[in-house]
Picture (cartoon, rainbow, N blue to C red):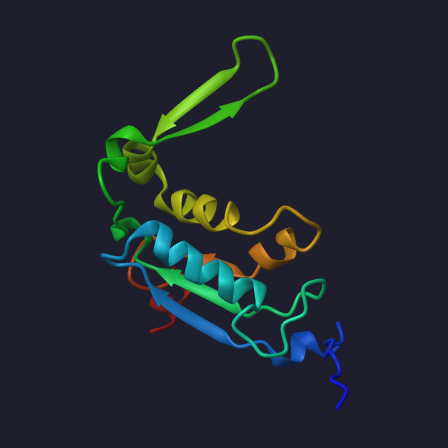
Amino acid sequence: MPQKSYIQSPRSAPNERRWHYIDAKDQILGRMATRVATLLRGKHKPTYTAFVDCGDCVVVTNASQVRLSGNKMDQKFYFSHSGYAGGAKTMPVRRQMEKDPRKVVYLAVKRMIRNNRLRSRQLARLKIFPGEQPKAAAKAS
C-alpha cells in the first residue's frame, strides 16, 4: 500500500489558525519559550509542513513574572555589538527584566525558531504583555 505525503497549501494555512493564551506567571522561561515556538511554527499540528507558515497565534501574559532556573538571573547576559570598534554592549537579565520583560521572552522565543524566511512572519503572530491583561482589553472593560 503506497503512502502519500501531505503538503499543506500556503493559501489554506491562514484559515486554520487558532489563538493560544499562555500565562507566564511562575513558569520557567526556556520551557515556556519552547512551547510557544512550537505553537508559532505549527509543529503541534498533524498538517505541519516545514516550508509553509502553518503556525498559530500566541498571546503571552504576565511576562514580568517569568522565572529563570538556577542563577541565570544574575549570571546570564545579553550581548549586542554596534559594528564599530568598542561597540560591544552587555545587559544582565535582571536589568532587562526591570526595563522591559517582554524583550526577555521575545528573545527566548526568537532564538528557538530557525533563522529562515518564515521566522519574521511567525514572530509577528506573537503578542507579549508584561501584566495580567492587554491594555486594550483593560480599556474596553
